Length: 196
Image (cartoon, rainbow, N blue to C red; front, side):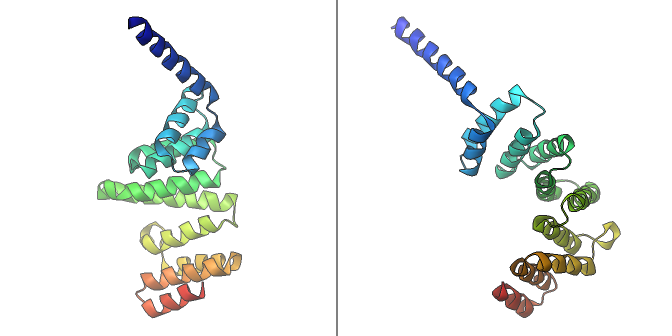
C-alpha cells in the first residue's frame, strides 16, 4: 500500500515536471483564447517563474486578472507590461481598460490621477499607431466621459469619431451613435446604429 502511494506521488511529481517543461507562450495563449481561464492562469504563472520580466506573459496575466474582476492586480500587471514594452499599443489599450474598470473602486481624489493616466496611455498609443481604431475609440470614449479640466470634451469626441469613420465607415457610425446616446439624442443614435 505504501509502495503504491509512493509510486503515485512520484508519477504525479514527474507528470508536473513534464507539464512545466511543455508550457510555452503559444500553448498558454491558446488556453487564454479558448477561455480556459484556470489552465491559462496556471501556464502563464509557470512562464512567469521562468522569466518574471516577460512583457507578453505579464500582459496575459493582467488580462486574466481583469477577466476574473481582480482589477487592482490587473492594473499592476498591465502597467509592468507597458513599462517593459512601451511601444505595444495592445498593452496600452489593455492598461486603459483595466484602469477604467478599477477607477470606480478608488476614492474620488485618486480618480483624477487615474483618468490622467488613461489619457497619457491613449495619447502614447496614438503616437505609436495613428491608424488604430481601438485607440481612436478609446480616445473618443475618454473625451466623452472626462471633464474638460483633464482634457475631455464633446468636440474632441466628435473629431475622434470622424477619424474612426475615415478608417472604417461602419465603426464611424457606431462612434457617432455612441456620441448621440451620450447627448440623449436617441433617434439619431438609432439611425447611426442601423447605418452601421
